[in-house]
Length: 284
Image 1 (cartoon, rainbow, N blue to C red):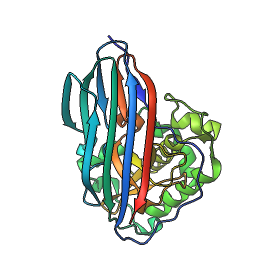
Image 2 (cartoon, rainbow, N blue to C red):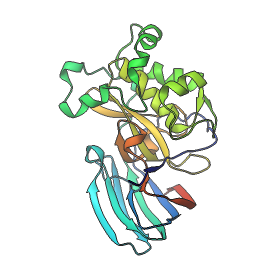
Image 3 (cartoon, one colour):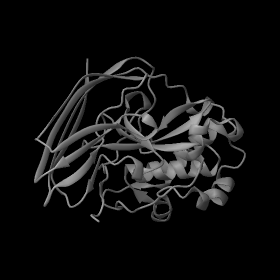
Image 4 (cartoon, helix red, strand yellow):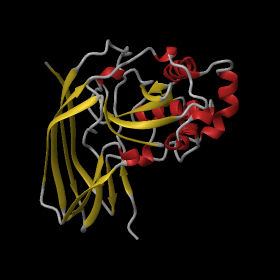
C-alpha cells in the first residue's frame, strides 16, 4: 500500500504583532502556484481554495491545472471549503487565483464569555478532545495551574499571550511529526506549532478549539499559514499567537482537529515538490 505524504504549510520569519482592526470589508487577491512530479500514477487530495463563508466572499475563482485522469470535488472537514481528488501522472502543475472580500466582526477576545461544555452543539464536542498533534490531556495540570480562575475569552487571551511570549519562531525547528508536547518542551516552532499549542491549552481548559489552514497578507515570506480557532459565546473566533495576521485579514481554507485534517496537499504515493508560491495582497 503506498505511503501517505502530507505537504504541511510552513512559514518563515516572525512578523510584528498584529492587532484586531475595526470590522470593515477588505479585499485580498490570492495567487497560489504548485508544481509536483510523481514517479507513477498517484492519487492526490488537494485543499488550497478559499472557503465560501458568510464572513468571506470568494469572487471570480479560477483553478488551472495540467491534464489529470480524475477530478472530483468533495466536502472538506466540517463542510468548510472543498477538497479535490485528482489522479495525476508524471507531473501536476496548477495555478489558483481569486479575490476574497472579508467582512468579519472582530470583538475583543477577552470580552467573550465561555460556552459551558454541557451546552455545546454536537458538532463542536470533538474539539474538546485530544487529537494526534494536540494531546490536550497532557496539559491539564499545567493549564489548570497557569490559567487558574480564568474562563472564556479572558482565558484564551492569556493562553495566546503565554504561547506568544514563551515560544520563539524558528523555521526548520519542527517537522510534519512535531506535536504540541514537543513544541512545549522545545519552546520553538513555526505557525502550525503555535496553533497546535494554543489548541491544546484551550482544550485542556475545556474550551473547544480547532486548527485553521488559512491565507493571510502579512506572512513573510509568503506561504500557507495556520492559526487556531476557539468556540466562545456560541461561535468560532480566530486566534493567531504568532502575531502575523490580524483576525480581520485571515482567509480560511479549511479547519480540522489539527494539521492532520487540513494539509494543502496529500499524495497517496511518492511526490516531489518542484515549485510552491503563495501570494496574498491587499487590493483597494
